[in-house]
Length: 623
Image (cartoon, rainbow, N blue to C red):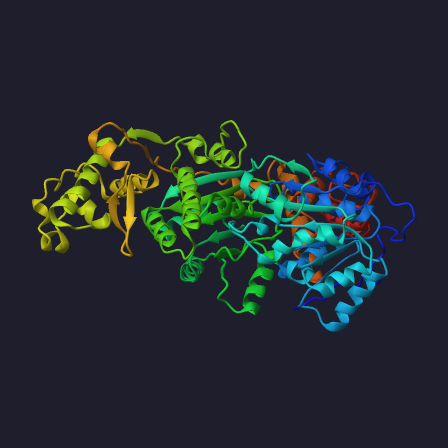
């Protein structure tokens, strides 16, 4: 069902839009509209900066409360806050969430009929909107700029600002022109926000968006509620099914894969295993993609299997896991994608399975890239950082945060902290493998991939080893002490350390400059020995009822059922009605009257008026 934006004229105004009339304070808006008693972290300072007319660059992790940083000032300041949002498919939900708390919000995009668009435009020109969402493509047209110039702009909020980075994973060309806003509206404050940025991307945001005089707010990128796990890939679909059943049964989750073919086959496999999974990639019909995204946002327990085409701007707070079954191309992409788990702050899991073929495939993609040498080097550096995260024997979170320039202590809640891998001296196996490669090249002018080299080292007679009489090579069978899987781990780690290189379209292996020191014995090669994974009780499954007494847990489930029915009737995602955290607070407080709801976080005046009696009735019926 396609829903239409509510005209601002039909919504009771949150604030007076008339210039000169006293407007509420930021603290009053926070409490009365959004139902929170205090700002978190840097929110207060960011809000003050914008309200006073200053610019801001905000780097804050997903779930850190970025939206409030521009929503509150948009309500406090005269005029309408213009929000640049990169995905028009999500604007309806963003607007619905604001309308639900009594904020006059609307959007302008290509999905609207002419009469609907005219209603929104008239509401803006009449000063009846607190926030107006537009896509960067629309904002860059001269017609839109002239239209906005005929009204009063309170501020410009540029969301997902990392899209301005030409070397980033989510580059959007239309973001490059947003720096012109400073020239056209020199007295209107601007705020650029992103949940992921290295120092280089941070500088690029500042430069390209002309935010040289902005105040910068960089929060910790740590997401302590997310448990990071990386495992060797071995029958990955079976591994994925086992993970979902153990850690995310019945929960919402996202599975990322690199290719459309892998997406579709994986979704079909999960469905065959009784898991409610749907595929999503850019090759699907637009209506199918929209339907899939809508179901994910509005229904419980759906798993989306997707390429990276899915996810940016997804506000669903209760995604309990994000899984990768192919190696991401960069740490930035990995962090952005895993950040879609646990936006509500509850325990969630980021799970990644990667193997030797992932490394070979991505190296080949870089070699075949149409970009110039500098571009390929940058891509290689991104992959090297991702491999370092995968192969570290130290805390995953420490490695991840250090990539973004933020020091930290071991977290105690990632796989390497909870189940430390053993480190062993892999120098001799590395020498055996490198020596085999050198001998084949020098003696026979031959190059082979990992599988054949491992067969030689293990002394495995196959049609190919027989054809090439490789049983006569000096290194034949000298690696029989390691299993096939162990040898693949050796190859993978040597590739990660750049002691091996892939060559050509078939991914044959060759030595590198660093190989000589290993062969001569002047350099050692420490390697990680993967620990045996033990089944664990799911932190993700425990999240929904964490810290609740049994009786309160029953009330919480009753509240969730009421919320699901209410959301279905309205045609909105459940989180727009209430988030899990608010329902847990209600289950614990057990309010007896509507007035008792006033002190519960997340319940502002509009929601108390809309849902108060129904909530009290649910509490009363639970006994």
